Image 1 (tube, rainbow, N blue to C red):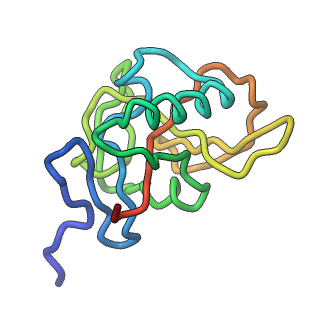
Image 2: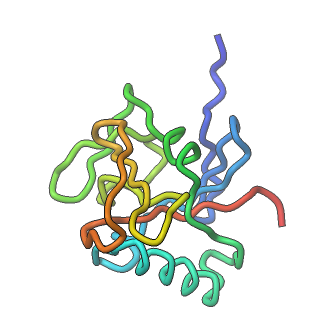
Length: 140
């Protein structure tokens, strides 16, 4: 049995996924901005966080659909905003949104992954009650 935690708190506002090598922000867009985001606003949020060197990094991005899905952990519960239960590792801070915009997208729609149910679906990009969790590659 492997007792090594999959997500390692870097003690800088991020956690490294030892399975994928990705680094995730411990807070999502709701916790940072206190507002919902449609897809285009999520893209602008990522740009803003990069310009501000959020947590000392300039290479944040929106996760790919398969990357967002890998955060889902059915046996782990974190309390999201509005007392909703979401299923992500407990290394992530409570009080965030219930899901995440993710790539790919087209002119009309984008994927949205729900951490309460573990499902993804396509929403119109103007769906205004979304969130995004920043991700980056480990390294520079």
